[in-house]
Length: 193
Image: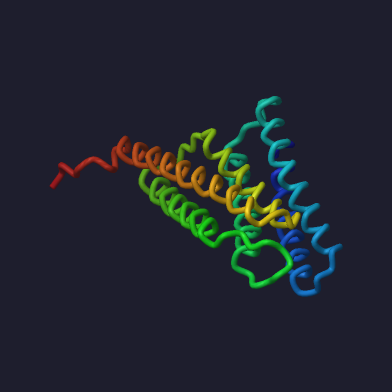
């Protein structure tokens, strides 16, 4: 278990605290709950960069890390986007539902694709892309923007950037997955029949 992986696990453990505090805020309007949710979200977002830096700087990249790191991102962002766009409340600006739909759809398609690739090829090769990092960052800014109660008009612009980057990254990952499948011997026609 590397230091980078331990930090990633801490990020995963922050997600339930973030969700509970945000729900408490929605139900009771207590600003302390919003601030605690914001603190948990901010720490998890900062640690996302820290664990990546440690993994690269100290050569701690691992197969476990390639699974846990995106999982931690997804748990944090999907819960934040879901609550701030689908949960009926009037305390924060509403994140556009179409952004949540784009993010959820991309993630579901990628998870299904990873399952097919793993079943077919036995191993999944994920190549991180800059546009994927931009998508994650833009999603984090969108959630943070809403939680800080900043101007809803600009929230839609940030959400649009997040949606575009998310869609492009999804298409690139889909292309990579199709390439992996086409190179697999099990994808070739069965000539034994």
